[in-house]
Length: 82
Image (cartoon, rainbow, N blue to C red; front, top):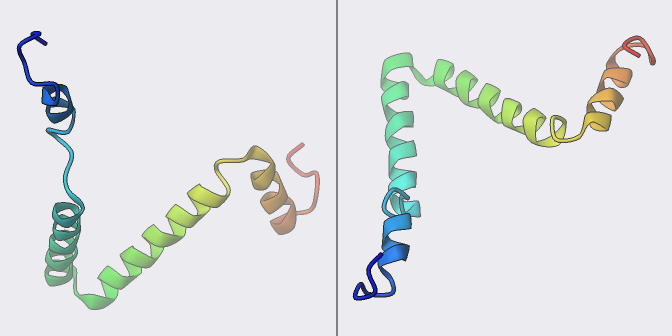
């Protein structure tokens, strides 16, 4: 960066590849619309539900190792994997 450059040039360079929320929403809606046309409503709904379930499991359980152990202990007999 040259000393004659405007001070906000560095900020513009960093945000060059980030999308605004409107563009991001439009891209998501476009992908959903294309998948709906290709797969149909029920298959698309199934994929979206599995995606949301995967996000929930990843967000809730995969951050904390103790939460995974507690979940496994709920499903299987306690201490089977220790």
